[in-house]
Image (cartoon, rainbow, N blue to C red; front, side, top):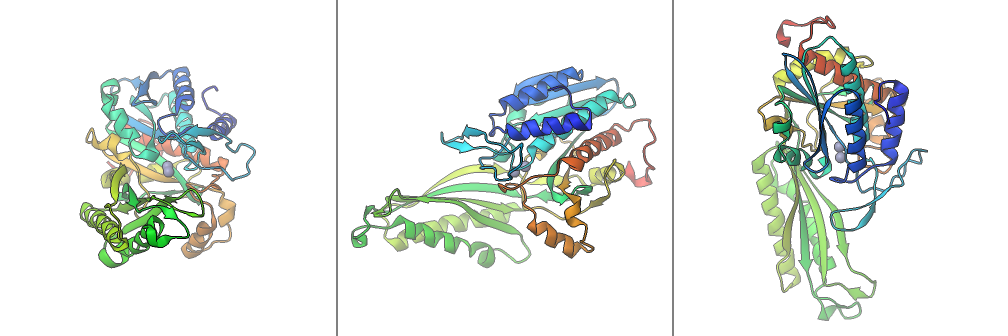
Length: 424
Ligand SMILES: [Zn+2]
Ligand SMILES: [Zn+2]
């Protein structure tokens, strides 16, 4: 693959990445494509940071250091889009299981758009400073950004004055969403194993059924947000996996559930995690279990705060970027993101926006925000096996948004858009 500079190159690169997704911390081929492209563009390239992370540096004398970030990992999802470039890839997950792999979160859009923006900025003589491109692994685990930092990212590349990035979502292409302040939730995942006593399906009186125990826990856990969290606080609790048993006529020994909690503040989080443990122990007791359930912490994401001044400065640049029709404030998202780690580590502002990636024609008849939301609810979203961003105009807008935002922070000499007094 050559550096993606034309619309056709970008689309080809995107389809290639989409057909060849890689799981978190296994983004070897993707990282190789990224590194080769950056080298061809004249960047100084650092590879293998935090595992598979890649950073590129393009230095042009005195001036600000602007970092643009993309994440590279796919998800263990069997793709069901039916597209001719759909993934048929398989991988091996952290637990050693063979799983299907899909770019179900659109990180292929992020990689392609950032390489496109790198090409455009490399060809644009009208800025000074240092451009840093950060391609991170394992966003889906919440640990890829931290892994790059821990592996000395900021000893290898200059410390940025700002970290900019974007996430594709099923807003109509041409629309960008940016919320100042706390924008993405904390996310904590937990595995709970309930221990029963196995036996023959015909003799429940001689067993302790962990399926009923875990099922009772799942139902009661769904009262935590509605009955134990204040109406003014926001939280989401989802049980994402439930595994027990091997055969229909056997009562299994144990049952395992994995759940995910999202909030915007530490107190609410502590309260919910406490309630989860209390209810799990109580259900085990209610079932007559011999052993308490076990708890294992899985992934943790920090909260992502969009710098308010940084947002004020970036919004006009995004609004004037080619193809962008509207910049909206969609409010905070319950999704989570680890991009903030790249900024908080060096005390730099972070500005992270949502890139519309749905075919705008789907929204042609929506005249109000309510109608738009109704259409939106019917469009497959990130992490769905049917998630399929429209290649164009999404990629072109993704490139121009990154380029426009970077140029704004370089404060170049080119008069691109009228500046407001408050922008600086
Ligand atoms: Zn995701
Ligand atoms: Zn994502």
